[in-house]
Length: 88
Image: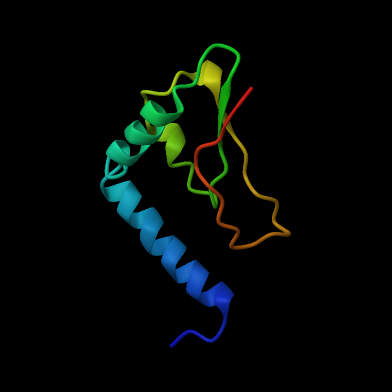
């Protein structure tokens, strides 16, 4: 049994990371739907703010010129942020 949120997060994060390593395209459709909805244009950008797994970066349909990876600082362990943010 886990006693703290950090223990729960670490266990879930490890399981999720292992699953994404085993089946890298598992979330492809989810990201495709988000990109279709967002429809980023020239001058707009997509920011991936994950909990450290770099999942979105492995989806090759995103042009690198519109993609940026931001990792949360170590002072915010277990932070969960949306994967896709479109901005101007």
